[in-house]
Amino acid sequence: MFDQLSALPADPLLGLISIYRDDTNPNKVDLGVGVYRDETGHTAIMSAIQKAARQHMETEDSKTYIGPQGVPGFVSGIKSLVFGTASSALSNQRVAGIQTPGGCGALRVGAELLKRVKGELTIWVSDPTWANHIPLMKSAGLEIKPYPYFNIETGAVNFEAMDAQLAKLGPNDIVLLHGCCHNPTGADLSFENWQQVAKRASEQGFIPFVDIAYQGLGDGLEEDVKGIRYLSEQVEELIVATSCSKNFGLYRERTGCLMIQTKNSEQADAIQTQIQDVARANYSMSPAYGGYLVDIILSNDALRTEWKNELDSMALRVKSLRSGLLENIQQQGIDKDFSFITQQKGMFSYLGINIEQVRQLRNEFSIYMADSSRINVAGLNTQCLEYVAKALKSVL
Ligand SMILES: Cc1ncc(COP(=O)(O)O)c(C=O)c1O
Image 1: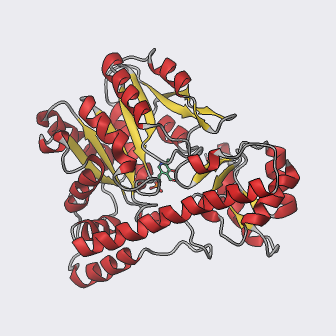
Image 2: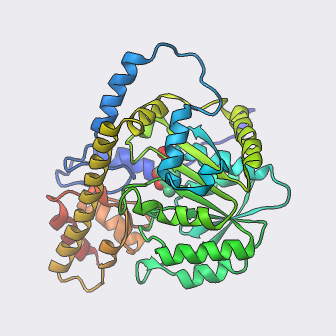
């Protein structure tokens, strides 16, 4: 039977990890995989997470199953973190929620819930979008179409084109949006853009599905969810998938949350049973550990402040790397305008160079990035900025 199935090509981005590891060039720079790194290139465990882990180890007294929803304090903590304590949807108990195995798990359970709804739904994704959005939605059986999003010339959102597409959608459409720190481009919707998306959603009847995997890594914990919170007040139904991989550094603990805002609390109760049922049919229930740690942090003032401060300093480091890179590029006297680098948000930036130039950077300078020219800005450090800028000049 299995001889019918041949080996699949390696994931191009994950494949870069081993090529980078084996590269002996002392100047090598890894701008590939999207994980936060400190100045030394290390992805450290956040100090609040370490403290929460110690506390959890001392107090956990059983490994029996938790409920299908996951760690209840985690789900309610994430709901408040994303929707805000003043949210009318939360106070009216209109938001169902479930802990999931990472943001991917949240996206997938959300997609499968949509598959249970009558009618042929189309899910619209930004062009470009995070590569894994496509298989996550497709494997759930949803039809996917791209909406215009990015202007490669300006490095910013082409909102006019996006809005023109949204104006054509209807109640059988779902629009997948990046809550902040768009992956892969770093180009985010402005607050005015979010207002227009909300208006279109109300008028046209499509449902926004917001993926937020970088809350706190753009302009701050509150700023980064302004768009989602506005949408939540303006539309009746909304789907939000969140990840604790980056902002709590819990990558391998697979910690995420799916939240479904419904028209009323009765519907939220019904949807709660549906999403738990989707999870049950796939993996039964989410791993609990990461949820416990996040719950401990969010419900303890001192730990929460410590976590927020560390997250703020991570975001600040990425911002200063953006300015540093731009400064170095300008010092090299490169013709192309790269000023978009400091306007974009979060860890990613699309350099807008072609695949030959990407390959040349890899082969001649040991600078590794995705073929699309997406760089993980957090992979830079103050020591390599000049080297990267000079290499860029040379391939341009
Ligand atoms: C846009 C986006 N959504 C979701 C995720 C999900 O991450 P995870 O499943 O690791 O929590 C990621 C991770 O890179 C991402 O970039």
